[in-house]
Length: 480
Image (cartoon, rainbow, N blue to C red; front, top):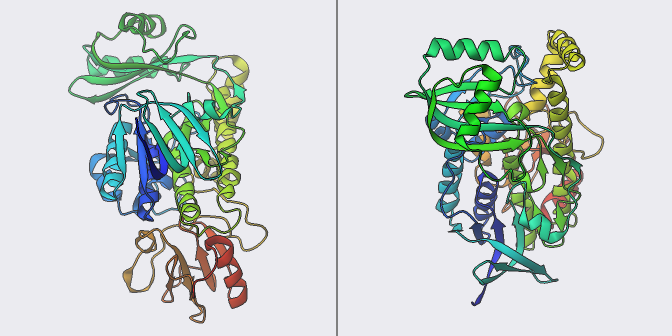
C-alpha cells in the first residue's frame, strides 16, 4: 500500500500515548496515533490519579471533566499499604487521590487529543520500522507503510517499538503473579468486609472492592507464573485461588473481565534512539505498589511533548530532546526502587514483616511520612538543572496571582511563563514561546521565576542577561 507522512507517529493509544498526542497537537505538530486493539479496553489496570497528574490535568483545563467522573479520597496508605494520614501542608493545592478507572482516563484523554486535531487509527499493528537522517518508516501488519519525522513507542511493557529498536530492558523478571478482575459476588457486604480484613492481615495482595450493584473488583495471588501472562486467567482458576487464599470464593460469578499481572521490574537502557523514543510502560515496568504506573507514563508524555514539538518545528535548542531521557529515566529509576522496597514490605516472611513494623514506626514521624507521600504522589520531583535556588528544577504548585488569577490557568496554552515581581524583565524575542506576568503576588518567593511548559522552574533571579541565557537554553534562539 502507499507511503504517507506525518510529523510524529505515536504507537499506542493508552493514557501515555493520548497525552503525548494532545501535547504535540497543542503546539501544531501533526500526529497519528496507531493502536493495535480495535476497541478501547475495559480492563481497569489503574484506579487512581496522584497529585502531580491531577496538576497536569488542571494545567490543561481538563480537571473538571476528571473530577466529574471520579471520586476524591484522602491521601495515606500508599507506601506498602501502611496506613498513616497525610501530614498537613503538602506542597500542592490538590492534596487528595482521584479515584477514576483507567478506561475513563483513557477516554477523556482521547477526547482531548481528538479535539486538538490528532488522528487515531485503531486495529493497526506495527510490525517493522527503519529510520534514517530524515525520518522513520513504519510498516504495519496489513502491509501499510507510513513515514514520519519522529516515532514514539507508548505501546506498553511488551513494547514492539522497544524490541524493534533493540533497546535493552534489564531488571528482574516476575517472581509472583496476581489475578485481577471485575465480577459479581453473592456474599453479603458484612461477610466480604470480614474476609477482606482477616486475609489482609497477612496477604496485602488480596482484596475485594465494591464498584456498585453487587459488582466487585477482586485481586488475589496466583498459584504461580503463567507461561503466557498476556492471556487472561480462566474463571474457574480465579475461584480456586479465592478458595485457597480466603477460604471462600465469596459466591463469585458473572465476570466482566479477568486479567493477570506480575511483579517484574525493568527499565529501558535508553529512552531515545535517533528519531525514535519510548514513553510509559514501554520504557519502564514495575509492580503496581502505590499506584504509580499510569501517573509515571502520563508525566513522561508531559515532559516529552513540548520538547519533541520544539524539535519537530526546528525551534529546539541543542540537547533539549535528549534531556527527556536524562530527566525521566532518573525519575523512573527512583520509582522502581520505591516499588522494590514496597514489594519487600508486603512479603509475608518474618524478616520483611519486621522491617514493615519498623517502617510503620518511622512513618509516625511527620518528616518521614511527608517524604514518602510526596515521593509517591509525584510532587517531590526535582530535575537537575545545576546549583541554584531551592526552587530550581522543581515544579511550581498552583499559586494564586494578583487579580485572582491562578498560575495553572496561565499555563494552558502550552508555553513557558516568566513570573516577574521586578517588573524590569522581558521575554522580547520569545513571546511566541514564553508568556510574561508582572503582577505576580506574594506567593512566589523570588524576584523572578522562569517556568518551562511543563511547569518546572528553569531559572530564578533578576539579571536580564542571565535570563536571556536561560531563555535560549530552554526555548531556542530569539526571533527578531
